[in-house]
Length: 91
Ligand SMILES: [Zn+2]
Ligand SMILES: [Zn+2]
Figure 1 (cartoon, rainbow, N blue to C red):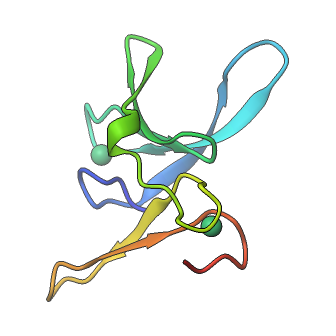
Figure 2: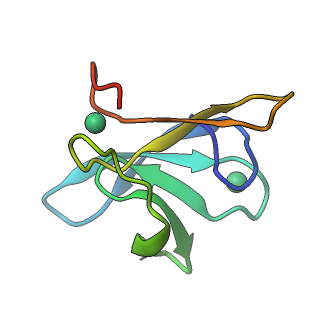
């Protein structure tokens, strides 16, 4: 899974959303990059400890509406490969 800004592999972290729920999150390791991804919202920025979502830019799966992630980019054509986080779903 890549950062949609840097096209760098993201690292799995766990972020505490609130006291009851822990959600698994991926974060970009590029210095100063605020980009994160989770299965509920897709890509978002964390600025000053607060998550900022941009719904308009979130790509959703046409089949089930899940927030998709950027899996890879073709170095030759620049074509992006977006995937649904649901196992077995191939839109
Ligand atoms: Zn990044
Ligand atoms: Zn899907």
